[in-house]
Image (cartoon, rainbow over all chains, first blue to last red; front, side, top):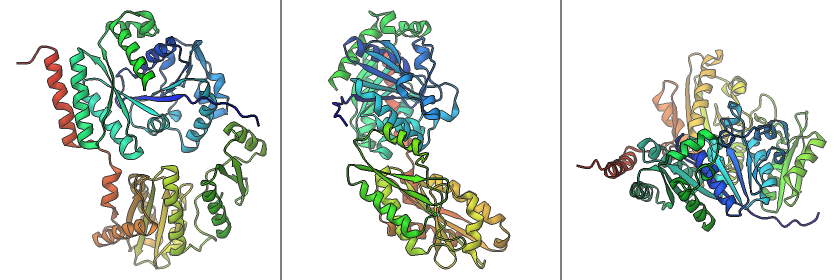
Amino acid sequence: MTAKTKRSPKIICISSGKGGVGKTSFSVNVATALSQKGKSVLLIDGDLGLANVDVVLGLNVRHTIRETIEEGRDLASSLVEINPKFQVLPASSGVPEMANLSYEEQALLTSSLEEIIDRFDYVLIDTAAGIGDSVLWFNTWGQENIVILTPDPTSLTDAYALIKVLHSRHDRKRFHLLINSVQSKKEGQDVFANMSMVLERFLKITPLALGAMPQDKNVSMAIRQQRPFLLAAPDSKASLEIIAVAERIIAM
Amino acid sequence: MSRKAPLDTAQLYRSLEDQARRHPVRAIRLTGKTSQPLGLLIIGNDITAAEVASALTGLRLPDQPRKASMGQAEGKLPDLAWLRQQLAMELAQVQQTRLPCALVLITLSGASALAGQAAATLSPCLHPGDLLSGFQKNGLALIMPGATVGKARKRAEEIRAALRNASFSKGSRLALGIAGCHAYETMAAEQLLALAEAELARATQMGNDAICQSTAARTEDSCQVTVEERAQLWLQPRKASSRAAGMAA
């Protein structure tokens, strides 16, 4: 066997606990920003039963992770190139069986993913909402955990619950918090400070601040256009913040 | 590896699997269409997963999940010594796989020849990987690899229903005790057994076909966000949002 020099990509899992807080939009845009900075990125749609990355990017997907799990199809053949530095691994939508993979299926997916990820600098996983088995598994597979939350009490509670499960059951200690849809920088800081205080007090975890995404109408407009807001409105407040977040990710 | 293999072979394979974990190799169980295991394939970790998968497909010997074991021979359940040995192996596995493991102890007082009849009654309730043995004079022990105490509790309720409906159990009293172990705690087989025995004793005392589960395990099994945590989470962001919107008094 010839010795291959394998790169080791940084695997980052993006979760939230609560649904609808902007995980997919953030994932797509931060992947776009990283690719603009010359980093090769793979974005995995980790919402295996209700995929959305393809929708946000307006892709016509022919093959997904499902074919690999069910038919043993080569995972590389499912990759979709968005630009030369940015590829997407889409998942299926409306397939309940895919939402909770068995232990054996997770093992198969891991080995298949390990075959393709070494060509990338960054692997981002946009997980499903909730604390299902697949969400927890993706979070333990990743090296870094990004948790997205909004200032809403429901989002705060669900994000905290997710962190609590990952910490208590899976020994994860390093969490990057991204506060989404803030009305002001101050609100983002307050939400982060409060969450930090609760995490430190009850779980003895010190989270890291990844950023605070401002409320911006360009975000919802871009989603309707099925384009990253970074491309649709490059000078918007949201785009400027996502570029700053990408820089922080590179510095991780 | 099918657990229906002769005991010494099963233990030999398990021992080889355990040893493989300490070296840069992987052990893959080969199970064919027969009930007997075909062997263990020990491979180097430098061989890619795709190559291994391809080779296994060529052999038509997929690495199948092991079946539930009810001991060496039909009608004869393994004893407590076997249970301790298997429990020790499963608890070592907990640290390897990061998956939990639960132990359920069952007694049925006032019924004769419980073990054999009950084991047969329980067959449909067993999941792949379960390990069933005799326990004390007239009881059963069921190791559930991969199960949390919560999942074991649900399954114990199914087991209780199955045993209640069995004709041989009429007029007798059931008791079930559950304990579990997670990857974040190190527990010896004796400790887990003692916890489950304490719960079994509590269930026996309670009567009414009770199921009891370890309090320690129950607490550790739950990640529920507490009232105090919620209060802290909700309080300040609301104030912050109000301030940001210029709505503060």
